[in-house]
Length: 343
Image (cartoon, rainbow, N blue to C red):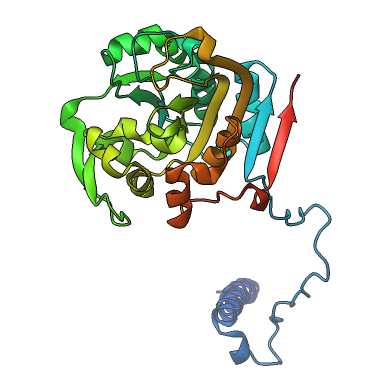
């Protein structure tokens, strides 16, 4: 090999070795960086080329777009709407209590229990709950997100099918999207009443016991034995053996309501039966009062409704017994009551 060729060869060899060394050195540096990243921060040498992450100071104030906590909502104990269309009165009274979504959640199974006790007369005779009041309750429950709303009662006069049709309730409930249910005998189950002072157990309709929400929609009317049929007495329609209740009616109604609890009470006093209840039959006994009473407290609702007949809560034994058992408040002076006049 001549001198020029030898020199050329040595230059090429030196350049190649330099490139390999650079690659090796670069790889080592990269590995060192990876190693430093994998080490805990307290193991990194102060002389390391990788600086520890900079700590950020916590914010000294809440960002302006963060909503402030809302104050706790307070609602009336009872609302009364007067002098309006039945559906409008129901809507306004429920709205004043915080709306139906306060009581009915999305996906709830809801049962509405009106008074449909006889098949003899339509709603004008005030023996059965006003159909438009029942329909308004159904609509509100569905609007609140109820999965299903069933309406039922166990008439003592005539068949359920007849009573549902003659009362006018079936037609309005179906228009509202609810379902009328004929209560089947096989669904009454013997049920213990743990708080019962006299009534220790009875056969109660199973669907009522299993419902997520029970809305009690009685009509305010006269009753020969109990003096008045209101919300607490309306619950007799969910048990099988009603005659045995009359032995000690006041206490047994309170006992029953300690087990079958109404989530919401909507008292229909649009047309009130003032005499010859519970079946009525004479339009001269009917008073058009155009009033709706709504409360989650069944004792309070019945206590207020009693005053529409010129009575006081203590005049009705089941109200007194219910209050004594802690089922609600009968002293109206202790209640926050909101009255809505739509006339």
